[in-house]
Length: 252
Image: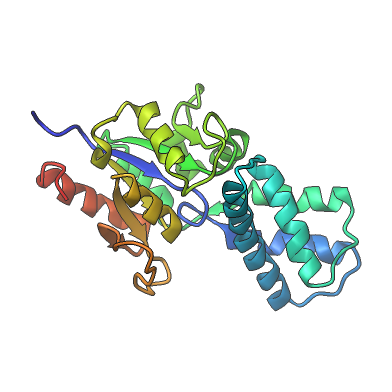
C-alpha cells in the first residue's frame, strides 16, 4: 500500500506571525495612558506576555481546566504589565492592546512561501491554540496567508477551542487534529511545522513528522524528547524538506 500524501499542519504564533510585531502598538497605548516607558521595557513586556500565555495554558492543562485563548491573552497581558508596575490600564486600553495582537504581521518569507506552496497542491492547515476568530482575523489581515487558508468555510483552521478544549502539547490536541483530517493510523503523514519546541515534542510524542523552525539559529536544546525530524531557519525552507519527504515516499 502506498503511503498517503503528506499533510502540513502549521503552528501560527511565532511560526507564521511574529508576536514581537505588537511592540509598537503596545508602546503607543501605554504612552497614551500617560506612562513614560522606554522601548526596551516594552520589549520585555511583550516577551513576558507571550511567555505567560504559554505558562497559563500549561497550568490550565495540569489543573484540567480550560478558558479560551483570547481570555488567556488578556490575563497574561495584565500579568506582564503588572510585573512592570503598570496596574491602572482601563478595560478600553487593554482591548486596544489585545486588538493589536490580532493584527500581528507575518514573517518576511511567509508570503512567498505560500504562493509557492499553493502550486504543489499539498493539503495545509493552521493548527493553533488560538480561537477560530483569532486565527481567522490574523489570516484576513495578512494577505500572505490567503492562498492556503482563506476559505468561506474556514475548514483549514483547526483550533483546540473547537472540540478538544485543551492546549498543546496535550496528546488529545494532536489526536483531535488527526481525526479531523482522517489520518488515524497514518499519523506520520501529518507534518507539523512549528517554531515552538513544546509543540514539536508534543507532535513527536503523537507519532507525527516534525519540522522545527529555528529562527534564532540556536540549535535544538530541549532535553525532554528527541530532536525534531527536520530543522529549518524559516518556513521558506519547508519546500525543500517537503520535496525530500516525497522522494522518500513519506518515510523519515
